[in-house]
Length: 175
Image 1: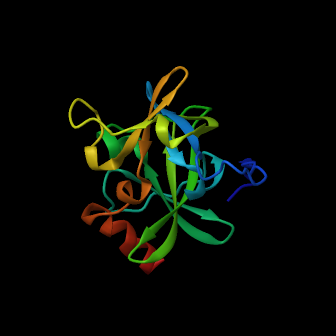
Image 2: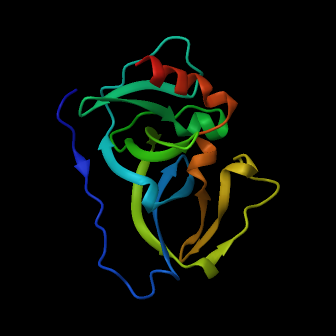
Image 3: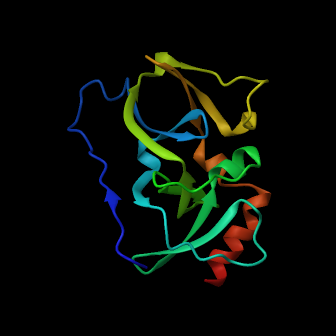
């Protein structure tokens, strides 16, 4: 794999109010804003070097070689909404760590553009909608209130688990 540009995530000094606030990485998929808990994000890399793997579900773009490790890459738009993301110059792969059968696993998710790291205090989080969302309700951890509106907070462990992810896990075992 070629050299990649990685965005370093700044981890702030201990904050006495840290138990009252949580940090989230916000990003765009199409015209919607999403957020992931910062603790599950390992790094952000430039899109490229994805090797397709035959016989995978449509939301699996392939794998990348990340410092000698095989990391599956999921098209998050296809996983959430059944429509593939178009690759642009701002497209990134966010490397996240998910729990799979009690074991930590790195996976890449393709996003249209990374926005920023934000603090969303627990009192600014509303339950996810039970109807009208383009995303399965069980994938939504909540709706975070920001100055410019709401951001959909994803439960990445649920998004990247389940029966339809079994092929990805089998691929990791073979690799």
